[in-house]
Image 1 (cartoon, rainbow, N blue to C red):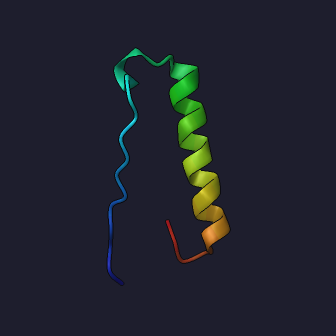
Image 2: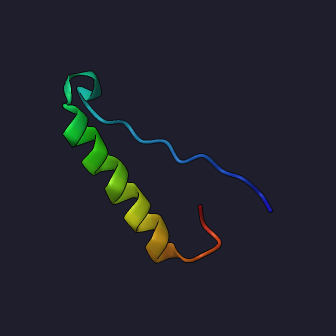
Amino acid sequence: MPKYVIEREIPAAGQLTEADLQGISQKSCHVLDELGPKVT
């Protein structure tokens, strides 16, 4: 199965709190879950 990396720019990412980064990560995981079971 092909593998891809999805990149996105997050302005001022170095200034975000750990909680902000965790929220961004959780949102990404939620979107992947909605795309289907073959996307990880």
